[in-house]
Length: 211
Image 1 (tube, rainbow, N blue to C red):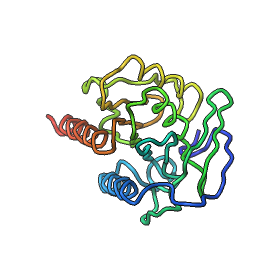
Image 2 (image 1 turned 60 degrees about the vertical axis):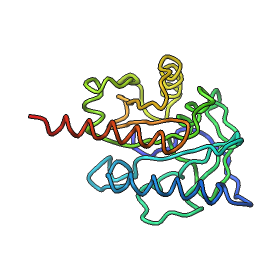
Image 3 (image 1 turned 135 degrees about the vertical axis):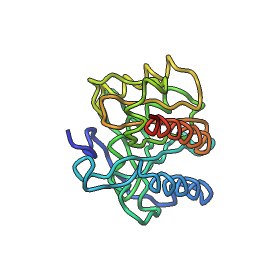
Image 4 (image 1 turned 90 degrees about the horizontal axis):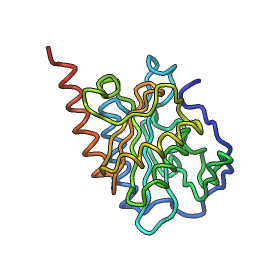
């Protein structure tokens, strides 16, 4: 299964207004830029068949919808309003979403949606690809989904729901063993989720450098 392949059905409608406030957009863009600088989000011809990897989503206060980076936009140097998609309705049974944007939502959109559905306290989700964290998940004592559970599938969505129910620490970083190098961080906002992710990444890189 190729990285970046969308495995859910969706209806996409063009937006009639901005999908995020200016402040929220700036925060999301800032974290996207930092994660690209760290090479845990982006695109590399030598990784994952050349597909873009990683995505970010958030929910603004009092909004029932999540806004996520659009499919295969992580590799683009520029980032603007057209790089976002909003999910207004999700049906996990049908594996279908009603989306608003100029481009399809990320292939991980339903996994993000389940994170939010599992805990109303969560308002931000970062999905990155970190070989260091993924390799050292056990040493870092990180919760994980099963190695047999593939990304972007109903099985992954179900596994994430179970994980978030059993792991109540927030912010939370968890690893998807069935999705090469896949790591998720979630929390009450981008700052909390991102800061937790960076702390785990620093510990993972320390393990990589230890004799």
